[in-house]
Image (tube, rainbow, N blue to C red; front, side):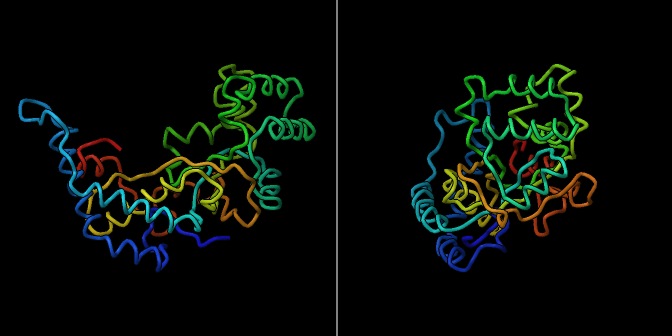
Length: 282
């Protein structure tokens, strides 16, 4: 497994990465300080004093050149990511045993069949869920053959992840279901889980986003006020069991702490503080 870092935690950055960032500390701080000033004077401003055109950031060229450099440095690394879902105990055991599988019509069918075989779901409900899946619509290509995650820890009550924890099946089985006869059984299946994953950037198309997040984290540690640079990401190849760093279950203390006080070293900027610092909602 390639060297592992958390894009939100400078303390996990390896010496080679830190050396590159340290060598560019001045333009990094200059770029983010100027972007913040432009945001306040233009993006978030109104009235007669607002500039007609968005001012140029004189540090932009150096920033984008650095992004290209960091892209090359990050290519051989893995990053920590978080997958929010609802799973049965048997599914967690299989995850720990065989690793991460991609979401496809076939894997959805197998998961539904396993629930039917265990008596947890009726064959009729399973068939109806399978037929209603976005896999059978124009969304098939966008959803098939991927395993989705997020780069930064997110609190379990966040509106972006809460629905994924409340009902079994995720976006390919339950997210868009409005029929209560189909959705009610899914809320009784399994438990909410947060899966921590070590993701080789070579298995994703999100290396550039990871580089932006790393530079933002470094800039914040030097007193700048960049955006959080959190991003969604997916892999398009299965990952081995060793890639599963941890599984947090809804009745465990760490489950509720994710995005608040866990992982150790993660300090989120709450929405009030973020708005105070930047003038914008998170």
